[in-house]
Image 1 (cartoon, rainbow, N blue to C red):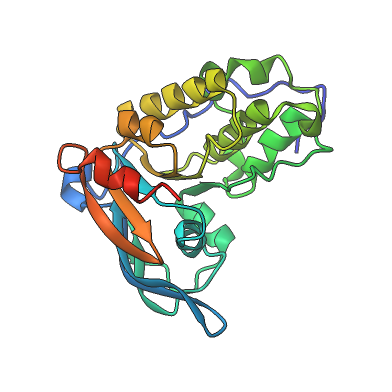
Image 2: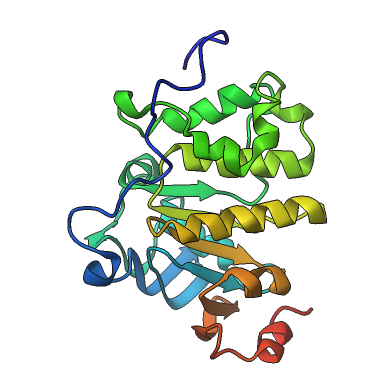
Amino acid sequence: MTQTGETIATAAPPPIASSVPETGSAADIGPLLQADKVDLYYGAAQALWSVSLSAEIGKVTALMGRNGVGKTSFLRAIVGEQPIGGGEIRFDGVPLGRMAPHERARLGIGYVPQGRDIFPLLTVKENLETGFAPLKRGERSIPPDVFELFPVLKSMLRRRGGDLSGGQQQQLAIARALVTRPRLLVLDEPTEGIQPSIIKDIGRAISWLRSQGTIAILLVEQYFDFVHELADTFAVMDRGQIVLSGSREELDPDKVRRHLTV
């Protein structure tokens, strides 16, 4: 981690995600993330039942459902925080198996957990620099794109994370994930408890990231109107299973909303 007086980044730092890997274009390699028939258990209790989902570069995949239906458990399986009990998760064709979270981060999986999990006693700058952990030494800089997406953070670099509003903390959590130059960005309910103006800022950031064509985005949400504007494909979960899935054009909004109401 750099000292407080040093500059944010060296000249011409690499962007958030610079290119599709040499294996080919997104169309050539298929989905970046592919989960097939994933089961997950907490002790004797089964939380996920044969869940299959994919995420493609240049697209937003939305996973929706009420609280407690298994959405976060599925994300924890993807990022390696919870082992799966059956099925398989592949990233760029590589089975993740029991790969540790930090190893998955090095592959290019960036995670913004529900509740944000920023470090309240660290400054905004120091929080962003924690995203350096999975990067090679020569890549350890904060991409200028981060401050273009969330300009408020640039003016708050010396403020402690715990002093930010909830919406500003959410922007910081997303920015920290982007510092890792992810190929897959996993967002767990980024609009929860956030004021409408910052929800719009987050939506614009997600839309811009998708437009770059270098990142796959997996978005877990309950706010249907927010998701409907952004997502290319949808999956709806209930009781640990996918009960609806399809493109934006294929899904009936009324059916989706019925699975989101209590």
